[in-house]
Amino acid sequence: MHYDITVIGSGIAGLYTCISAESEYNVLLISKSDFLNSNTYLAQGGIAGVLAEDDSFESHFDDTLKAGKSENDKRAVEVMVKEGPQDILRLKDIGVEFDTGSDGRLLRTLEGGHSIRRIVHCKDSTGKEVAQKLLGRVVDRQNISLMERTFVYDIEKRDDEFIVYLIDHKGHKQSVTSSNVVLATGGIGKIYKNTTNSSVATGDGICLARKLGASIKKMSYIQFHPTALDVEVEERPLISEAVRGEGAYLLNERGQRFMHKYSPMAELAPRDDVCKGILAEARIQGSNHFYLDISHKDSDYVRKRFPYIYEKCMEWNIDMTRERIPVYPCQHYLMGGIDVDINSSTGIQGLYAVGECSNTGVHGKNRLASNSLLEGMVFSRRAVSTMKLQRHAYEKIDLAVKNDGVNHIDKGIKSEIMDIMQSSYFIEADIEKSLRGVKRLGEITSELREGSYRTDIEYYETLNMAQVASMILGEIIENADFK
Ligand SMILES: Cc1cc2nc3c(=O)[nH]c(=O)nc-3n(C[C@H](O)[C@H](O)[C@H](O)COP(=O)(O)OP(=O)(O)OC[C@H]3O[C@@H](n4cnc5c(N)ncnc54)[C@H](O)[C@@H]3O)c2cc1C
Image 1 (cartoon, rainbow, N blue to C red):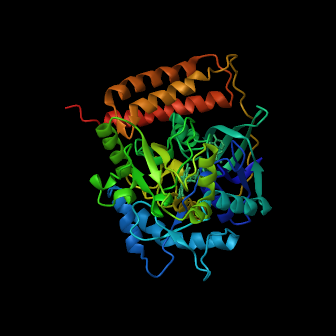
Image 2: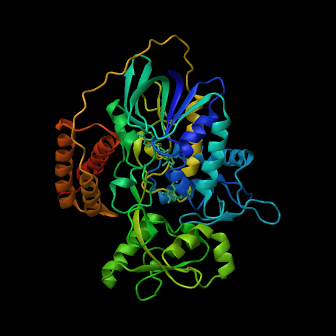
C-alpha cells in the first residue's frame, strides 16, 4: 500500500499532523502502543500561550529564552509564540474543554519560569483531554488509515519514496511505501531508571532518522523535573509545577523552604534551577528527602483543581490536602533530537520530525514549562503546510525478509542501560561513569547487532535505547572539560 504521508506516533505532534493534512492526502497513522499511550496523554499542567490582553508575545518570548539560557533558536521561538495561540484556539474549536471562569474566559495558571499566568488547562489532565479529542477527529477522517500496536523498526529511502518496515501486534512483519514520513515518536525517558515518561519513550524515531542520515543534535539537553512523586516505581507520577504555581512550598527534610537560597524566583524558578537547588540542599542536609506542601490551601479547592494528582497521591496513602507530598527529581523531557528547520524538515526530502523527538531549537538548554504541547502543534502544522503531494505510480516493493536469529533478548539489558544512565548523568554529569558507560553501551550495541537474536519489538527497542544512551553520554564526554 502507498501513502502520501505516513505519521509515526499518536501523541499531540502526530495527531495534529494528521488533522492538519488536507483531505486529499492519503495518510497513515501508526502507533507502537495503544493510540492513547503517550507522553501527551500524561501531560498535566497545560499549554502556554498569549491569549489575554495583560500578556504579550515579547513576555512569552523573553521567558522562553530566560529558561533556555538564551541557547534557543530565536526565530523558532518567535514563530511558536506568535502562531501558537491560533492552535490553542483550534483545540477549543475541536471540543477541548479548557477550564473557564464564571465569565466564560479561559482560566490561566502559573508555572516555573513564566512571569505571568498564561497556561490554559483542563484541570490537571490537559494531555488526556487534548489527546482524546484530537484522536476523535482523526478517527472520523476518511482519508486517514490507522495502525495501532504496530512498531516501525526500519525506514529506507529509495529514490523519492520511503519504505516503512513494521511489526504488528502479532509479531508479523510487513511494509508500506510513502512519499512523506513524519517522525512523531516522542521522547527517550525509558533509558532512565526513574522517569515521568510513558513506556513508549525509547527514542526509536531518533535512531530511525540517524540511520537515514539525518542530523541529531543536543542529545545531552535533558530536562529533569524537580517534583516527581518519590515512590518506588520506574514511571514516577508527576506532581505538576502548577501545584507550586498555585502556592505549594518546596520543603527540605526539616520542613524548611530553601529555594530562595538558590534562585530569586524561589519555588517558581525554571526546572533546571529547582533541580540544582534540590541537589545542593541534599548535600547540605545529607539526605534526599524533600516535600511539596499545599496543605495550607483550601482542601476543596485543591481536590477540585488537582483531581488526578490527588487520586495518584491517595493511591500511596498521601492526602495532599492535609499532609506533605514526598518528591524528588527524575528524568522528564528531551530538548534536543532530530535536527529540523523552521518547517520541521530534516533536510532529507520528504522526512520530517515533530514534537519531542525533534530539535526545533525552541527550548534552548532548558524547556519552559508547558511550551512542549505548543511546540508539537505549531511545528507539525508547519510540516504539513510545506509538504509536496506527488502523484505517480509506485512499483510494489516486496519486503526483504531478514533471516531471523533464534535467541530472545535478555530483559536485563534494558535495566542495565537504565542503571548506566541514572548513575552517569542525573542532573549533573559524572564524566568517569559516562566514559565507562559509553564503552559498555558500545559493547551492548555490537553484541545485539552481531548476535543471533530474534528481531522482535523487544530487540529493536533495546538496540534503540542503547544507541540513544550512547549518543547522550558521547555528547557529554565531547563537551567535558578535561583540564
Ligand atoms: C508526566 C508528564 C507531564 C507533562 N506535562 C506537560 C504539560 O503540562 N505541558 C506541556 O507542554 N508538556 C508537558 N509534558 C511534555 C509533553 O507531554 C510531551 O513533550 C509531548 O506530549 C510529546 O508529544 P509527542 O507527540 O512528541 O510524543 P508522545 O506524546 O510521547 O507520542 C509518541 C508516540 O510515538 C509512538 N512511537 C514511538 N516509537 C514508535 C515506533 N517505533 N513505532 C510506532 N510508533 C512509535 C508512540 O506509541 C506514541 O504514540 C509532560 C510530559 C510528561 C511525561
